[in-house]
Image (cartoon, rainbow, N blue to C red; front, side, top):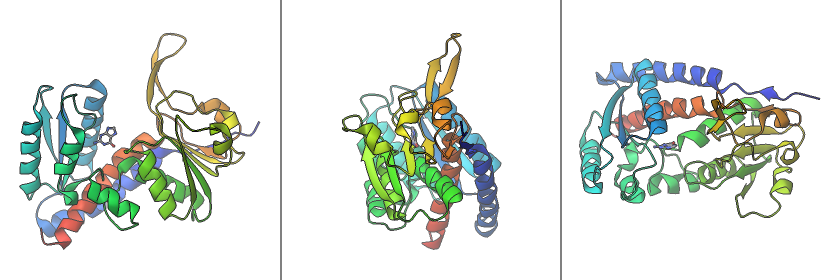
Length: 292
Ligand code: GUN
């Protein structure tokens, strides 16, 4: 059986971080300060704590100053909005990341909409969502941006390719479909209510899967030779009772059909963090160009 090429997101992310480090150093020389990333975490969700620590460690490694704001789980929406207001006004902060999900009573939409769009490093503010859908430059969500960079690295020009995005979240599925459309792919988004999921997926030259269901995509979903990106990060217990991370794609099965495939871990995850650093620098450079 043919074995798909394994797309190494870790190696690609390292290259991307080296480029960011070089640009960050140019910025720091010109401005007399490093680009600044405020990281806001509310509560003590353990997965979120791990992500936030990774983001801050890697920021330091590329010459970005991070400003951590680790808030109690019972923080009120008003307190969080007041913090965002002060970060919006703080000139040493170029980028604001509010780790999602937020604890229950806090309205995520209100919080995202309070972030200055110029500092919206996640690209979740309606202004940046609108810019992306209009095909204009802006800040683009980190995970889909990482996927696009990997696809362009492997496939070059994406014009005319058939892309299927599995999942329609605001964080991954929807912006991914927009990016692929802007890159001139023929794009279909499928989701939990779609009919003919298998048939739709089997048409795809590019299959991006972001649903959060371990192993839901198997060999039968994949067109021979397709490029498959697995965005899922699911914690499961294996047959030996050991906890481990798996994607939404059954890697072993998919490897027999796909042309290339990202592993979990070591695929899209490292690219998301590298793109966060890239976006921080983009925000810093754009604010500099605006004289802010
Ligand atoms: N939670 C899961 N993914 C993300 C992300 O890309 N950004 C933020 N802020 N929170 C997340």
